Image (cartoon, rainbow, N blue to C red; front, side, top):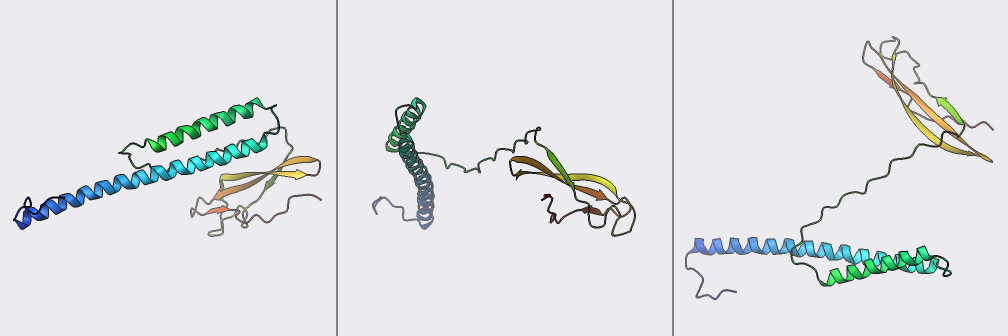
Length: 184
């Protein structure tokens, strides 16, 4: 705090001091917010590791699994590092940007599975509902579905061809999938 004797008598100078103080307070608030976010993240990770260690300890029914013992030791080391880092927190930390985790792409299903192909044409067939001319193939949407038939698996491939009219630029695709493809 400054004493009243050191403050200038000019109103503009006082306003400038207040703006400078407000800017400093805002910077300090940003640092406090980022510190709180880092602490909350660290605490959440510590709790997650505690739960994971407890779960692994419950899963360990004997001393046969050395791999499980190593996992527990590694998690305990990470847990200790986080607790130590929480105590010795640096003063300035930039705000962390949160990104959504990326989803792993679906792997193709094995080629040895028997396949059943279902093709769904648009309701109008290959003729344009707008002008009545014949449409040309534009592409197709393909979706695969793994289905369990008692005592075996079968792969059902749903194909929905896309058609485009060269006269009026109309595109037609089968939209409603209400077909039961299983043979009983």
